[in-house]
Image (cartoon, rainbow, N blue to C red):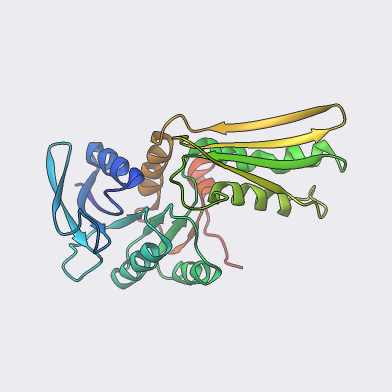
Amino acid sequence: MRRGILISGICGRMGSRVAELVALEPELGLVAGVERADHLCAGGSITVHGGSVKVFAGFSAAVPAAELVVDFTSPRGTREALAFCVERRIPLVTGTTGHTEEDVRSLKDAAGRIPLLVSPNMSAGVTLLDGILPDVLRMAGDECDVEIVEKHHRAKKDSPSGTAIRLAETLAESAGARGRNIVVHSVRAGDVVGEHTVIFGLRGERIEIKHVAESRDCFAHGTIAVVKFLLDKAPGWYSMNDVIVSPSAVKRKELG
């Protein structure tokens, strides 16, 4: 039996690609899409792999039942998706960035009632990069300078990227940071999908660790992995590390 998936932001860059992959998964089913009320697609239908998919104007009572919501919209869109998921007691997966501190508090509070995964980057590669950075910083020593350069297409709204912020937080929180300032540089040009380079500067040499997204497929396939992972999970705050690194040994994280 196919599991019903609802996609908020279904007509956007990421939402449309995730919709295509959901439609191809034998165990998943694309129930419908949601867009903001003033979007050109809202209230109409789109075609996904030969099938007609209704696009609703916001999370009204008319939105059909689903077992999970995927959100790639805006902070406001995430707030609306969260309220919908809490009301219907279904999981939420969101890759939206730019959330305020109040938004994050609301998301963490909701994790006590529904399964929830919030990540600025759904790719396996970035998850692995984030995991190794503390060890590299610790081994590089106290005199190592650390900076991050992130590049994205000219239409990206947030700067720095949510991924760059997450990598900087990981470095700043690591045992090797010792109060170091982690500087982030942002580039917005052309149609760059996404590049993140972490630079460790030593005397007379440097180490550069780079993740390059060749296409949005790496994020979309990661999202599908998250969807499959989060279905049937108990309420809790889950991370990409739970999905990519040790899905068989996942435990709910306590919220701080």
